[in-house]
Length: 455
Image 1 (cartoon, helix red, strand yellow):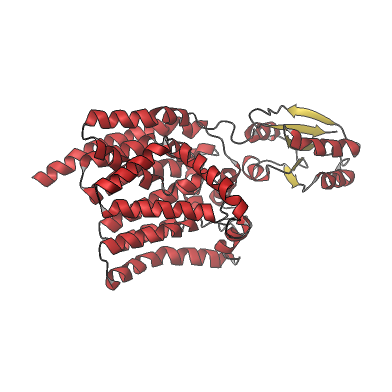
Image 2 (cartoon, rainbow, N blue to C red):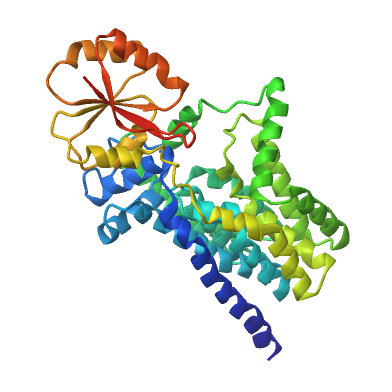
């Protein structure tokens, strides 16, 4: 009877917080605009959805395809809407709330800590912002947390299958493997259990291998590493700027980072739970890896460790107070204001590409859009139009292009950022003997581009 009562105590709050998570994230689902990478990934999904290139043979793919195929399921249902590509991540990060709550309950058997962690997940500004994105990271994080939960439940086949789904989303899932191995070590998994884990990994591993083999292209991993410019250690002169940049991102992802660190140190000193030590060691190692290797400094890379950070925060808050009112007041004080700000989304994230695309929607055959900065945006926004996008590497190349095709009678447009980067290109166009007419106004303050008609 006591077991049933304990389950009920933490189940109902988690269900409530799950609904609150969905409601709290809903505005940003429609307010956000695609960044460059999001537009590229969504263009893959649209290509699959209309069966134009279902294996993405002619697309610049450098990641496994699970997210793209999930996004493609929603386009026939929702139409060519940006938020259709965000729905898989919206669903995934809504489910992250109960998943983390279940994980904490199974780790610590403490209802208050489970509910507090779920509340932190609900109010996390970074999770709110990326729940309404088309990046691969939100789905990756949810699948990894689900795998960790099944590892704690001693279900190696299910845990491995979920880890395989994460690998089919993004190869960075492999960075989570040391944590899963650490959990297995804590629970004294033997060779037989690990053998079952490997067996659970085979279906998705085989599926991704066959998909890549059917495409007959280079390894996705090799392509991704090449796109990064290879992996190298940070040079000595980079260490301090990189540490400063990562710390700034961490502070945005985790309001009052110093409080988090203090709570974690107090927790490790006071409680001595092996899970806390494992999480703290993994977070520190992950941060050191991203600092000491020349990995791009992007806030979405913090998503993978953010649930673990929030678990430790909830544990630390729980360690200093056992009163519900005090616990909730501390969390609201730390997270509520940044969370409300994050709900507004990023309406200018696409640099005005959507507005330009609307202007060009009915452009006739033969229309050419010259571009250097926003080509991945055009793959999505001009998907069903007659506009041909011509990328140019430098101003002289554009001048040469115009010398050959500029007087062919077709409409020619030029998309440029509304800042000093545009000046050499504007000068090259004028020196080539062409005039420019502004047809879509830019906005330097918000980073919106300007569209010119070339005359």
